[in-house]
Image (cartoon, rainbow, N blue to C red; front, side, top):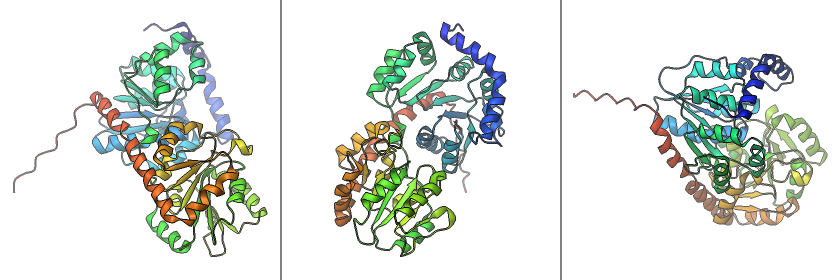
Length: 436
């Protein structure tokens, strides 16, 4: 197989630099950026044996991409329980978030670095029947090595920004060659469709996996326990908050209703000590979940600084305020918001701030359905939240509209699964029952 000049140069450079990767990974382990017990997986060395039978590999690097993989993994396991699903991600946080949520029969591994030897070792061991890339970044060695082995590939739920397209204009031949390696290309939206087509892809359809999926999981017993402690108190959940949001949002929401309980769920729980100190300085009577604090009558702010429990706290909410959407205006950096379908699937009314750039399509769908409200500034939050607390029937209707819109938006996964099934061997026939 011949390669474009840019792709040839990339392959040569990564082959020359690959001997340095173990040292770089060791440095990342010392900084807490890699797992000290699983760092070899980044070199393509397997963390476990490959199960017998067909295997589908799904790859997504970041937390958002990893979470969007779940609906697809669940569909595969439901429709084809004979197929093992291998999910690879690239960051510690994504692994911590996704692993507890993986259904039975789904394996997690850290993705190999994009070096020729690491990729070859990974593919030689796992030997997938199908590779699905759920992301916007194209990893040349990984893609071309899979293609050379005859592994069908799909680029799914790809988000291609104008900046990404401009970057690939510097190496158009390389972009065309990488995209032509995919048997299926399904971008998230019409803009991505147009950009990928200009870059040389054969676009087959559109699917946004972030629109699909089941409601967030939760512990039923813990939900019952916390519900009993809360009683009839109104609850606002600040979901997936970032730097400066906890303090600013809690301040404007204070006192909106008698006996109001604020549940704050930081996106990164390691920030909790600093967040707690700021909130205590503001006079909140608060406690932290991670150190055993509980919701007593005299607690008006509950800092839910644990991973994987957002589904529990959203179910306790009367109103959900989406974190990450106020951060830039508050000096916390650009985040782009978080998934408003998470409260929508639970029929919870949600309010987003001005920066939801990563969720524009989703926000538009939910706003048109009347299931989501956006505000231009955190100072405007009380005007939207107060009526929902004072009129619970209005909040419930808003939540029901959000859930209906979320259910309608999930249909793209059905079409995608129909296209991917063609690459799998026939399912084993169920043995006929013996007559009694």
